[in-house]
Length: 495
Image (cartoon, rainbow, N blue to C red; front, side):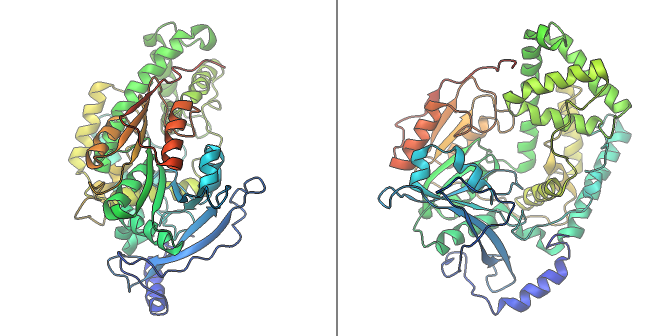
């Protein structure tokens, strides 16, 4: 059971303890204590001589009420590998989500960073509030989200649309029962204050930051509240400054384009996959697999599980071969095992991620109406009758029990130059998000990996041009004189 599964009792206990703990207003985060020690066994260890250490930081549940209840934020640190003269400060990192655990990310992402960055920065990971070991929130069954097989996530017809909306209402009800009074406070804006509290507890004058995907949104929120505390900030695979629901709709359309590219690519390798010699033929094979799984799920694998597998594969081109092989295996052997991910969707980690994802999105700003949700599904189905709607998490905000009165502020004209990084054809965070975000970060530069179709770029795609530009910025403060265009890898082979 999560720490927040009994929210009323939690709040009472926290309120009783509040007088015994140091408090701070949002602009005066200094004073909180952060002591490092051993990490939980679940946190990977870096190779010697590097080390990882962990601690927790007490912060207000509501930064507008600093004398009220408090929560704990879990923090990890891998110290800089270089000399004191090489050190540039701290580099907070966030892996995305919302809902991604950042505690192990200090180790896993750092291992991929260029050596000069590892020598220059203490890499700081943290679980955002409501996630992992930072006072996690639970949403129970989430309206049947973890049923196996799950209901078809693409409603066709009025009866199916009513059932779809009912599942969203049930999900919202389950989150209200699991998190209750804390729902308003598990927002990106509150987490931005937590980030500055981490900076203050580490006695650092500035926060340098590397955020990927949702981490870019979090970084932009920090920049809005603490522009003069920003050191060097890299926002990779950028979420644009839209409401979360609008972003989800934009992503759903980008996934259609990515899937069309995948179908064409698969057809170009017809001898390898045997799914058809042109894109239309491969599409027919794809639709046959989904149709048959919808009619007769196999071992708990139905249309919802199929769409989740497709969603995951479209985000990284190195997964395309596995998706095409999985389609062929089902058609020839009747087995969906090639499509099934290695880790179970209905696992404690997945449940925690999905809960935090909805809670944060719905805390960040106004949600859609039920009418808008249905209208957008119909519009998307007019573009393609069989879309992938797996990423439409903010649809549940139509029934959310807490209604935010304002959007999370993003960016500031006072922030130092920020480096935005994007893949030209990323379907998960389409590049128009980076172009829009730079409007509220006026001195920013955009580093684009052309001819690339994957999510996550810096220290991820192995591109020397991207990694070199970002490393020069992080280590030496070199801001490119103009936007940077890097040659990408193109479509993958079929190994």
